[in-house]
Length: 318
Image 1: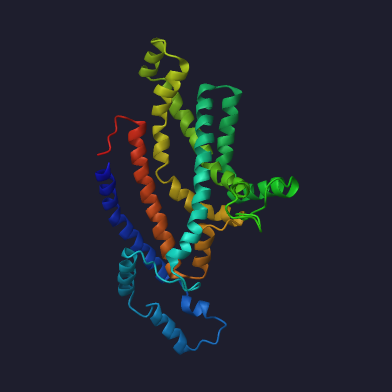
Image 2: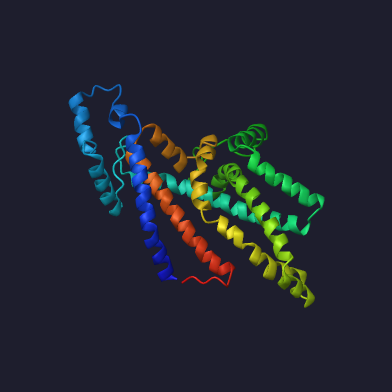
């Protein structure tokens, strides 16, 4: 297992290097000067601006800037934020945990709701239950995230006043108050998980119907095994394999897709922070965000391959 993980990490190095090059070039070639942007309206002279540009290494040729940045990344130094004048990596640690909390809760909802719905739809094929689940899965893909978030805020927070309108904690509350944090997290997690619930329910319905028609399932029934044993031991385990495939990039997808949800619910997460950095052309923060998200993607794919071996014994992790 260690050899497999190490080999996958080594294979990921060229991918991460390619992503770093593309990110660096796109950010640097984008219109606008970040130094002039954050000194706009101040009394900074041309000499001051040039001194700042020299301080951040922006007066060097682009290839040298990239090499310096890459060497710093190898030392886990993503540079100093132009706006906050703090290490970009330290700033991200303040926000990435908030986004990961939201993403992991959304992922749990996707699996706990989407997988059972797909199995139920397959077992109740052709009934009104199957029809309702399929309609809901289509609606889950079609409903815009921002619109659903606003509707839930109006109904549950404004009208019923059951849940807060946004934020991560109530002002004046202890930040370790788990119940208060869960109340704030419930609506954004539901909105963020909706697409995944719709996806997994459709995948599980199709795969379960396919597996239930296989010879080994009919043989298990012929042996007199209990329906529950046939369903959960023989059928569901094989039907879950495509779900594991879909899980490959789901963590990075949830983190990257949290921007709209974080904005609607005023959630202080990585998406909002990176978007604000992009508007301000804060190079170190933007580049750190892309590289950290790419690393999450690589890790999620490694986890997917490990789960493959657990779900399907025919696959060996070597």
